[in-house]
Length: 356
Image (cartoon, rainbow, N blue to C red; front, side, top):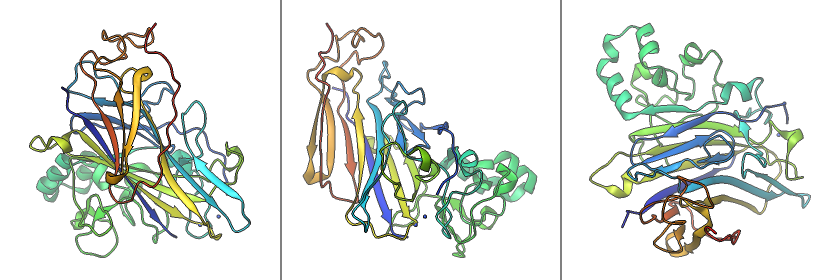
């Protein structure tokens, strides 16, 4: 029996809002591939789509078929403003819509920065191996050599990084704005890798830590104001996404997991009450047509499993498509909220037959 694949997701809201500039469709796709999982990270509010609008990219690499187990996991945020109006920002599939576009919002007016969408349509990625190499050899290198050999560290998009422009050719947001998380060696609040600061994951009430791999990106729901696809006004939020993975053979539950944290920053003036944050999750355990879903509220988890020990037709075919199903026993795919309770779970299905 194949080991279960576990995806663990954090949603970390922060209170802090006002918008509009034209913005093209988000394009950037990056990958976490530090352990047994290869997972796509995108800049449009969705996860695990491979960028083609058609396929999932959450793959269990030890399996020879390497078919995806998750097609999509998309951020949904909704709130009611003081006038009683529902405001929604959400993403589903790329060929339908997304209300999130790359780039931060200004703390002063809640607007996107000029050229913010094109500048920030990128995934920033760093590995523990490169961080260790930088710590070992950094002191012996010139500034130019550090920029050339370790651009991901010298250009980490953290607050007040003085070298960011030299790596990417555009400026960070203003000095007061928190961006990518980092270990602050001298506790001065500003990122400077030449002073011992390093990319890291930071969670509330936890010490900073460096996993095997980190990716980070930033998005907002204001750049597509004129194109809001759900007929409501945007919430005026900035979302900073951190995703990471551990290569930890002695603990397979970590080697089979991806972790994400959504830092949601509200840059508006209206009180939104109530306000809900959730994930639209489309499991595809290889062949999508024979999946069942369920939830375990006591452990803040929802999951998908195959209706039988055989996926699709058992020969790699799903709905007539080759190489779209597990040949061996399919795994279970779970999603767990680690720092917030699972308050609601709703499922629906297409009720398709596996293969005719």
